[in-house]
Figure 1 (cartoon, helix red, strand yellow):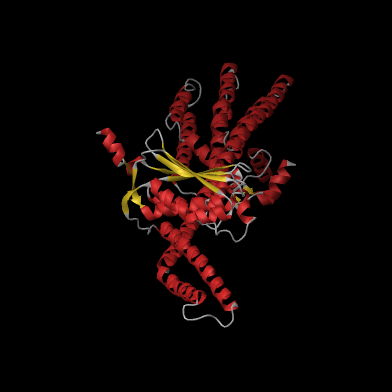
Figure 2: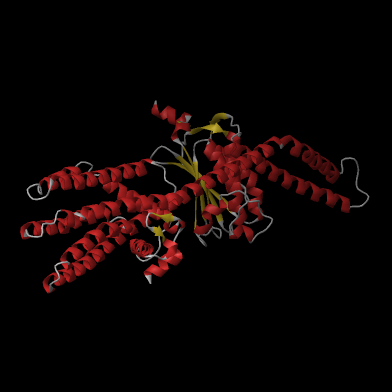
Length: 505
């Protein structure tokens, strides 16, 4: 069954063309033997040309590992027969063995130094198998060339030599089963024929033992070969996976670069559109305010004044949204310019509280303050810090239920950083949504439940403004327990206040 499967499913590198011993498609004895050996080499499954190539490479490496040991051994072995075998026979046999060994070594070295394509594996396979077969037949011929009919001691020496030689020959060729078979079958066949020529029952029994030994040797070699093949397959799969990962990484890097370039183009576009967007909108707001104030006379139809008020409110809302988008675009484009000056964080907080006090009263929300005395002076952009306070306080008021309290705080940390922010007792944000709400134009479930109350830019702008100053923004919240929006300023931008300096002096 293994032979049929291997024959049907053989890869291009496994059955291409006519070789030294016939074509595998011809179903001759050599082809059948090779097909069976190839199937055994793959654990019963035909291997890919790339896997065959890896097997041949391992075989070649084993053949070049000991370049001088074999010639020395053959010369010594030939000399050991000099007392009984004619010198010309020994010389011819020894020369043939050395020449075949050198040819095998040369082929193996050329194979290892050549960039062999997997589709060329058939050509190299026939070279290795042909040289191995010639070598094995030449080595086994000593059972007939050196045989002395009347010398039982010498006969035992010859049989023992060939039998023992099967072990190193197996170790060298076990990496590729077709070569392994071409190595052991001629030797085992020569031993069996030599024993059978005695013609008695005892030697036929030895032939049976030899056959059983060969089956056992093949079985053990097959197990070792399968383990090696699994290692080769795993290595090949690993290399394929690494190639896929590198390709995926290249594609991912290219896609990220394109996305970043598109995002920068968008940010630059919006940052450059400040004048074009604000100028007509300011005109709309100004004219609608004139109309709603009836500076040039009362409207004949009172409804027009209501329309003017709606236009003015919508324009103010749109202007605030455009300002937020432009600020965020400048931050993302790295073009947000800050004007550094000495800033009193507590004073900015108080200014922001007064601005939003009317809105808080309208929603029946109380604003409480908790500022540590003698806070250091912050060296940075006052407008950015004021906008940070306003954004945080606006969010807290917006989502706080009537009758609740919003707390503004500012304090120093043990590591010299300043921490300030706003805590509320609103519906809170699910932990899974905290990272989400920090992205532009994104709101949590609470924001989506109250449409029209925001654009989802406030926290993104706060995060960007703090990053420009080397600080960071931290958002902590749980559903039903309110939200803690906290900002941290680095100690490098802090300096003692006047009162602190006086006490220190």
